[in-house]
Image 1 (cartoon, helix red, strand yellow):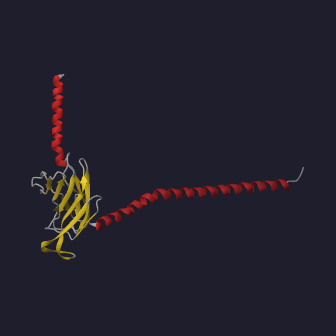
Image 2 (cartoon, one colour; image 1 turned 90 degrees about the vertical axis):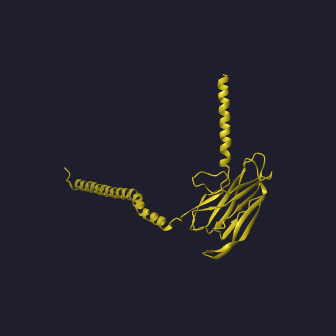
Length: 243
């Protein structure tokens, strides 16, 4: 029994250690959804989990890319939190469809609220126009705890594909969908669908209607012939001389 208890204790300790090592890797700050179309506008949420048992998250500071500035940025109010949007002058003007962009949002800070242990909060932002010449944007984020600790989520993805210890929220950019092709596909699919639905419902009903009409016509004709036979028989009886 002592051997079984010892084995169970070792197994429990190993499981706890594995869970303790795995949880912090999953509890980083992320951007949701993680993808958006190049050249468009999008709404995202910075999802911030609290990964401390003895402190609350009290401040979130998100830095926006200066090498690919966004002309339009707006934030959704979060109850209990104050938000400050900071704009700054760019090192060099950036040409956009709306003219040269000399200033852009460089930082958004939320503070005054509280994310308790075991909880998370989402901070929504609408932004655009997204660049067309890159496949991702990084948003380095600092998470401040009530005890004074600051966690800097700013590391870029590693070249070997593994995740760094404190990855920055990453928004992947994909080519815009071709609306014309999708519309064409839906239009081309509709003619083939119509006969399949119409044929079973229309054709049998027409055939049944025609056969029913024919039966009624033949039945009516037979009835008429029968009536005529009765009349002729009655007339014959009347003309027959009495004995």
